[in-house]
Every structure is written in C-alpha cells, then in structure tokens.
Length: 467
Image (spheres, rainbow, N blue to C red):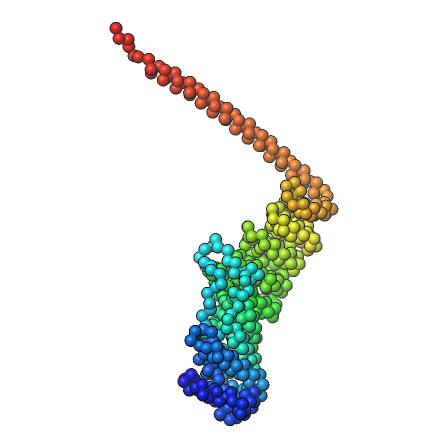
C-alpha cells in the first residue's frame, strides 16, 4: 500500500531547498511534512540497492541520501514517540525489506556432508578480506543505525508487534553473513534487544542455542559463532548464583561440544571466556568442563591442541580445590601426552603448564598416581625428542619434579629401568622362540622335500621287465 501511495514526484519535492529542513519535521505537526517522510520511506522500501541490474547509479545514490536523511531525522527529533505511531509501521517494513535478504553464496565452496574437507572459511585470518565485504554495506549500515535508533528510543511494548519472534529469527539468520561489519552491527542490535525486550529473552536464548547445535552437528560452517558467543558472554556474566539448571545444561550440551568443531580456532577466545564465566560462578563445574574438553581432544590438529592446553591452564585456577584429586590423573595424562608430541609448539606449551602453581598443586594431590606417568614422559623426551628447546625445557621440569619428591622420583626411575629390562628380556626370549620355530620349520621342510624326492624316484621305476 505504501509503495503505490507515494510517487517520485513527492520525493523530489521533499528534496527542494525551499522546503522545511527535514531534521525539524518531527517537531512539526503538519501532515504535509509527515507525508514527505512517508514518501521517502516508501522509496527506500521499493528500491533494491545493487540487486536489480536495471537500477541506475543515480537511484542508488538517491536512496543513500534518503536513508541518511531519515537517520538524521531520528537523531534530532524531540517528538519521536508522538510521530512514531504514524511512521513506525512503514519504517519497520523498510528495515525488514532491506535487511532480510538472501545472502550471497560463500566465497569458498564447501560441503556440509563431508568430514574430510577442511573448511578454510571458518578461519577468518586465512581468508581474503575483500571477498567477504558486502557490496551494499554503505546502505545496510544506515538501515542498521535506523533500527538501533528505534530499539533504543522507543518503548519495547510499542515495538513488540513488529520485533516479534519471526523478526528475531530473520535477524539471527543474518549472522551467516561473511561481512564482519554486518555481523558486528547485528551483534550490537541483537544484544540491545535482549537487554530491553525482557519478554523475548527466553526465545532468544533458545534460538541461539539451536543455531549452535545446528552448527556443531549439522552444518559445520557458520560465520557468526564468535559474535553469538560474545552476546552469550555478556548474558552469562549477569547470571545469579546458584545457577539455574537450564544454564548448566547449556554449558554441558552446547558450550562444551563447541570445542570439537573444525572451525574452533575462529571463535575459541569467546568460547573460553563463556566457559570460564561458568567456572568462576560455580567452581564445582570445573570438573565437568575439564572432562568435556578432554573428551573432545583433537588428535591431529596441533593449533587446536595449543589453544586447549591454554584453556585448561586458565581453568585450573578457578576449579574447586576439592576436585583436584579427581582431575589430577586425567589432566596430567593429557598434558604428558602433549609433552611427548613430535610437534614442538604443542610440547613446549604443555611443558610451560608446569610453571603454573595451581597445576602443580593439583598434581601434588595425587602424586603417587601421577608421578610414574609424568616421569616416564620426561625420560622419553630426554631420550627421543628431536627438538633441542623441548629437551632443555624438559630438563628444567625434571629438576623441579626431583625437588618436589626426590625419593619418589628415584623410585619411578628404578621402576622404568626395571620395566625396560623386562621388556628387553622379553624381546630376547621372543626372538629366540621365533628362531627355534623357524629352525624347526626349516628342518621339516628339508625332511618333506627328501621324502617327496624318494617317492618320485620310486614312481619312475618300471613295475616289471619285458623279456
């Protein structure tokens, strides 16, 4: 109805220098000026910037000017609430028409069904930034600013009929945009809606959780996971203690599985912050988090291993000390495996964990169980690791462990030597056994060969002599 009601003639008249300045229109009660604003909104709604090839650059420039003027009006009005009842519906229609669009195909092809393809686009630092920037951002930015202005200045209950569940779902879908500028604007707007529209909070949390789970178990590709986690970080920061069961389930069923995806490097900083917020509020959750991270530990991705080692080191400072003894063995076992990694970065990062006093305290809680495994890992590094720096760090950690409990360390060394001696003796016995088996098999082969030869020779003799 709006598109047919106002034509370009009214729009041109609104731009005439003899007309009243647009920034004062909200201060006037004249219907004429309001109609001019409505005409501008209608034009911005009907013109598809840079999408329709039949449009001319002049139309695009004209739309940009009108959007800027609308934003200026909203910034300078003193009677926004009074006029908003007239302008709100066409403004929201214009915003929806411009924002809710089909996103372009990804800049790099991917397959959501193949687990063998590395999704490079999940790592922003490795992409060509030019390929991700939206061609229509100059207009989209103004539309986002207009939406932010409305959300900030107008009562949420007045906007509730426009910013409903459908609107929020469409807004959430736009986080798939590859343009980081658009995702940043979306993050600010979505967070502001969450802050002001309290009656939508439950739906918004559920929608974001569904987006996370869909990414983890179905899509394996999403450009806006980092921005959504930033919103969640602010939400978690406002949780009261004790935490609700709903929030604990979010930690266990959503945040922890996010550690296993291929693109974790792209959002690990935000993910680690969210997880640490939970552990700081309830340190008893530290055990759940540590076991969950160990469950999804990568086997071949060295960059992810380095990130997770750092996350575990940060978590150990907030874990409830009562859980130290339960976590010491699995925690130290994983760190020891990383110390023996042939990747020097992983090995060095794991060795530096022993400089953390909280980690050392946790290891000392179960020193009888931990030391044999750790000492064996240290000795293996000193004998076999190819990197000189890793060997030097290993020697430093070895000296520290010997100072912690020299008697136990010597006992572990003796046990290692005894196991090596037994293993060597078992190898010798195994070799001798195989030698005997091979010798017996060789003798049997020779006997069988001789018997066959005699049999064939006998068969070759004639059974009788002709006279």
